[in-house]
Length: 188
Image (cartoon, rainbow, N blue to C red):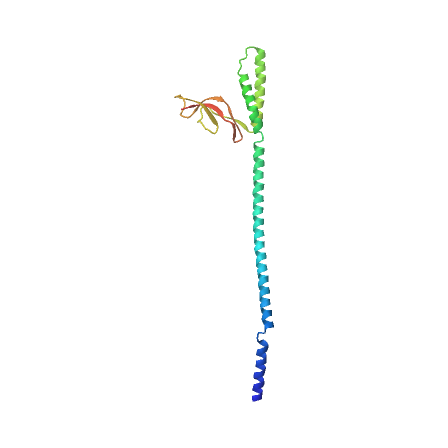
């Protein structure tokens, strides 16, 4: 039995020696651990790059959508106010046309000429109205610095304070934008 015990002890010792950490086993374990750590670092690095790329892509998409929206708004504004330059150029001629129509007709030929001018004037106003041009109403209204330009002030008891008393030059709006303010006399 002693022999048997010695044999079992001997086998246990051999097993322990085999399981003991040898420099070779130690190197493999450290190598495997360092390789796993390197792979994990690489995975973490790639994950960070992916997250950064996704974030950059989302920002670029948002910037692109904002740019598209701005371009669309600019395009709509350009379409809405496309006639502004033409209207601004026509208004002085329209003013002169209206002054010419104030001439008194003394004979039939002048009356006929004035009737023709009135028809042309009406057609001009209709064309401007189709484009969204409207006259700014002034006399009797409260002075609005966005629509009126005060060139004189008077004291008149017939009008409220800060009311437009007289209009010297008509003002015009294109849609919601003032093309030319009315030149007016304002009550104090």
